[in-house]
Length: 193
Image (cartoon, rainbow, N blue to C red; front, side):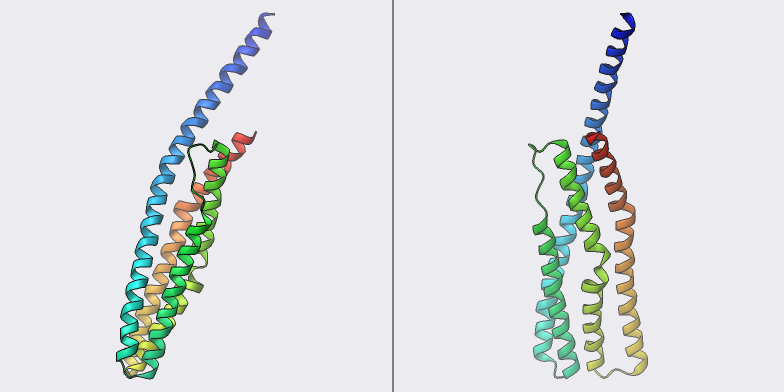
């Protein structure tokens, strides 16, 4: 009889401590998610603002500069900026905000979906964020008739900046988003078992 009571008390005690640990982990995850969401919101605002500024500047440039290649480059840059704004807005529309009434599992699943979309968004940044504007910038410089050395120098700088953006995005995915995704997956598994 004493063994049965001891076993029952032990199970109740261990279940209660697991519940407390899970609650603490969820609170820490929520704090980290709030910080990450603020960073992502700031990134989105900055990128959209810069894209709007570039649309205005290169729109004026396309109107004022007489060189055909520079006009074509300006138009490609403008279209690239419109694509960038569209991609950022589209990503934001996919996310449904987490509410306080959501259960822990629902909260974790929404956060997991959000992180997966962010990872997908940053993994293919080279195709929609780097190549189109880089092509426009190179055409823009080529239209001015700069000598070969200056053209290669400006093109090299443009490619280096694009490569830096690519590496920076890969770094964010590897060091911030994937570890957070792994911890969320393990928490979901823990809650479902």
